[in-house]
Image 1 (cartoon, rainbow over the protein chains, first blue to last red):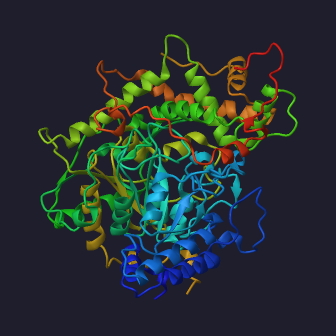
Image 2 (cartoon, each protein chain N blue to C red):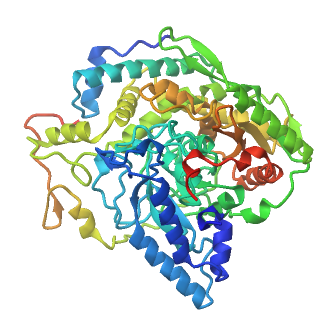
Image 3 (cartoon, each protein chain N blue to C red):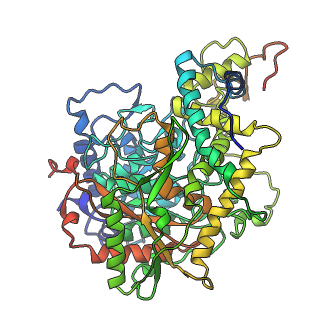
Length: 530
Length: 105
């Protein structure tokens, strides 16, 4: 068996036991990237490979020298009989929105094409300290603004390994594609409105959005600071738990990190699900979307196979002894996207004001004066989606005296949270341990199918975004393939800092479906790779 | 309450606020998308709001609950940061002069 098929847990155990050298593992990972990835995303990228449509294009850059040094250090530790770390010799890719000392950190934008980070993000440093091999940076929607990867200024953008004519989702699409295509068993992503879970579902991998504050945001280029969460993408639940274990914890450099102790997730997921109460809600059966012509809201039902996968999963969990609680009301779910349009845009506009061509990054040549420098730099440096988000943020921030959009959205956001409070309240009617929902309304859509329609693209996140508003943890796990052979994901949402519970349920589901026929199917991009 | 569409005049104002310079095609696309997004935001105006609203993040015990000590910590590589500026001299970042009489905002 190729090393690239090994789980992160297996790799770390074998490396620590001296059965596998970190250097050999790195070589296998790089060979897989060479075999499936094709041209890396480049600024104004020119396609050179005639088979480019069949390639994955997960990566923007490799950090071979760094990974090589890390592999040598791990092997040296093992040789001396020392503990080489929980992720000893495990190749990891990093969404190119995290600072990594000495490497170009682009955010997939022309604006940062030359920004060389002078420090390392806390989450990345913890991975390095645990013995991981950082093999490179992966593609994303520009500044994480998108749900398909298509808005990246670094083209070709990532494709879905299951069918390369389809998008991998976004914004952590490069991460999900890299994991699905067995380029790296783990990838570090971020989730602001569903940016880990949606691509993970589209690419048939596990993606975890931790509670807000569980993992430090230090060194993450900010999108919407009250929503941003770093988190793991992995091929199975124990690997996601392992990666979370390494990255979780407080950080003096991010004052919003929690001081709550970090549980042992790997132990927690071994428990069964007997007696756990798992909810189903009718408010996750469709998305309410405004018709662009009339403004009237139309409810579009969730794709049939996706809905069926949720029901099948509930049945599986019931057979394992979980109690399924139906008809849990989550009436404010439909307001998740309107709230997101306000909160995320205002915060994004504020965060992106710092991109001015003065301190770092892209800058125009020979500006007439300071105003000319600002305007031309921002106009030429940002792509269309960042411009759209900044303008919306500017408009909403400058609203009239009798309508404060941010305050209004924050009030509704609190009502979204209240739905979850009631559902998880141990003294109330439903007393849930987890809420089971679709992760996405559909499987992965085709490239160019939605790109440009910023509203419909945003509504693709309706199943995920409420969790970000509430600050709660949620995990997506693969739950089958649709009629077109594309992956389906189901989502488990937990109470504050109960990653242990949702990972436990996800692991039980993964174990009980381990022999399912759909789990034997391999992504299209891997079918020609030995 | 019904939200009005963004007028061309208001749109020009926010372009100025955002420090952009856009061509006609960009403006047409962006204005259409902004107005479509506002249709979504419209939903928020029709919800009966509750008086008491607590931030979803307020209950989490966090590092920032205790003020950190006000200790100055030097960054170990200040020259690397200064070197990234488009123009720098003697450890200082240089910027062009503002246009005379113009508001930087």
